Length: 156
Image (cartoon, rainbow, N blue to C red; front, side, top):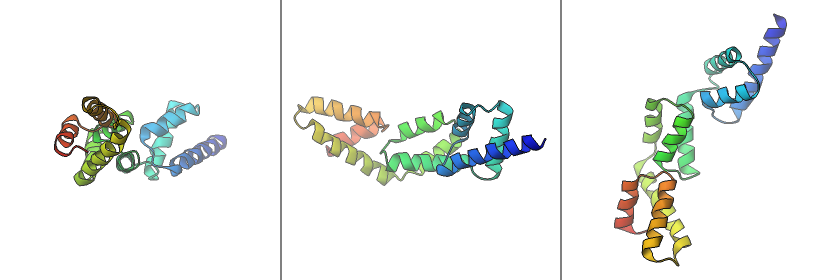
């Protein structure tokens, strides 16, 4: 019994260090614990403990993920939403995280990436430049209608 408690404390400490580095989703920790060779019962017990100790918090993770991917990687809402789904975040938290992105900042970010990327395509004819710029914005996760609207109205 003593060995089991000692081993569990060691496993918890390893999980705590992993979660202390950055915000983690439940799924991310679950996957890591399985990678480390833990069994289902151990994994679920560790996750439950981590939640009660507030090392894991899905809402906090979703907000940090959305904010970070938007500010640092300049991802659009579609790509952020997809990333949160991969982490198996529930729909209400995905919506909350997406809504936390300020609309003015979002539009400014789209304008910025289009303007910056346009320099790469300056030597191309306008139709090809437009096609490549729009494809780039779509790949970053920005909505087609919004990208088309900014292209038509503002021509970055």
